[in-house]
Image (tube, rainbow, N blue to C red; front, side, top):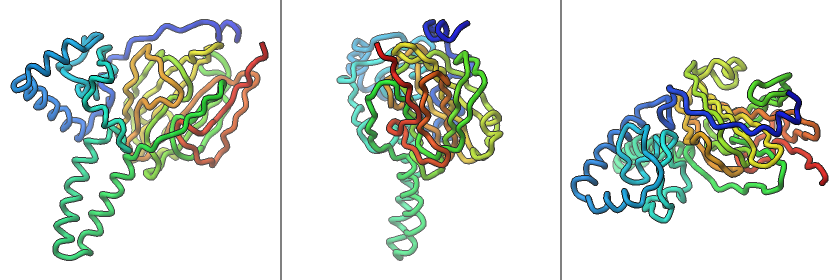
Length: 320
């Protein structure tokens, strides 16, 4: 198939694989605690707030088929959004204010489960002597710092690919062929330390075509073997604008990071810079894109990049 034909053929979204049963497929202690809290919350709503449950049920649209629990309000979609098509109008989400917090919504449970005990230790320790509060206070500050979610200015110029993650560029490799992209491609690898923002963002306005979850090891993300041995989530995208280039984003777990989050739905359309997930603690994110004529790679090895705002590559637009 020629390059022109490859670019012009639109792909059909594929169903999720059987092993991708949650937006956080690797599970985890905090994840299990939050699921248990969700069961308790739904029991409370059904028992004491049936009017609210009926109101939200009437306003819900889409299908909840494929989800292992009831969907009573938008909070129930946090870990199963990718399993269904149901949703609510944003104006009906009484908890949408959480999106405005300067912290990752996927990390709010960890912040409470780790942060509240540390806060208590700092207060109690400081009550006896100020220096006893130093260690828990520093650890609390780190927890809050890790889950921060600062606003980003997303560039609007056509033909740009923005970074899918914060971190340092550790790899720029030209590939002879990528199976999904269908032709020569470029792979840019970004290492995220524990001090980076860990939110992942869409590199371009695109449609989700395929998601593949691969359990694996947890090697240091600086180790080249981590790219293909570590647990990872592979995301195949197709640009919305002609020539509909295909892109790949890979979220790769690291030595400390054990939890990948991706709430994308197959067939979903996302804007450039859209937040779709995160990797909890140090990790690696890769972007693979076509090595087409007119491509200008702007990223450099060792460069520190910001997800959603740093431009990694640019395609020159053809004159009409």
